[in-house]
Length: 283
Image 1 (spheres, helix red, strand yellow):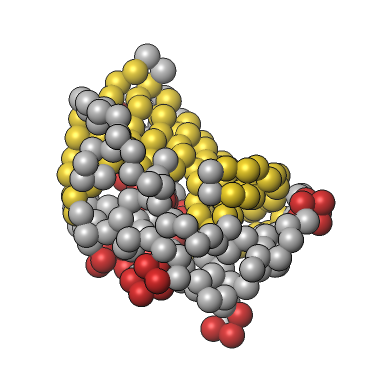
Image 2 (image 1 turned 90 degrees about the vertical axis):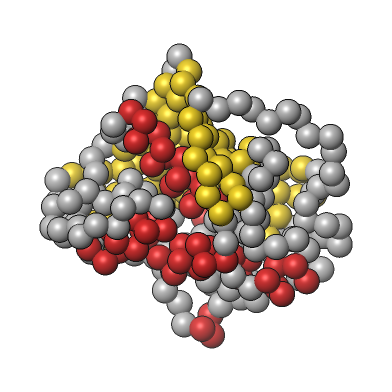
């Protein structure tokens, strides 16, 4: 049974800050390029890293004794101790100002911006908005807001009952890949992400009730951003995205894009063509 959610207590975390530093290495860039289906190459000092390399930098490190049953650190500390057991990356917004480069010492300054509670079809939802500023030796490289959602652990299936899906959207640009367990493991390793829903099939199916391992939200967003940059020749100035439904391993998935007046609309889709994450890029 989940303990009572005290929103007034959780909102006391608003305004808390945290700072962390790390270095962009050639090995990190090689690993991330490989995981994003790019040419690995031989990155050298000064070469640009993939646009979301900051998600791999200065990740929190906790001893095994401080991890919860889902592989995340036990609640509290910088993030508010939301008592809802399911935690997912719901979406966010990124402003790209300057690429991170091999050899850069990077600093991430983070701030809890908001904590809100809503009621959805799966029960109580608690959203935590975190703002980040990432700097390099050349100044501010990235500004970002991440939206983290916490959900109840219900006895009902984690995925909604099947409905007649809308026709899959048509894409002007499309790439297809396979979301296998090795891809998910590699991204978990690059981001030091211990969340068991991405690699422990027994846990994700028997405890959380999903049909298989769950594709990382940030990995989907990273692939969308890289497609936008490839099509336009540079990273978007601003990218806004949100998760629509889980994407599971073991199937084909696609990365899609359409030109729109405001820039570009992009999305990942499952094997049936149904969008799983949607984003909008503006230059």
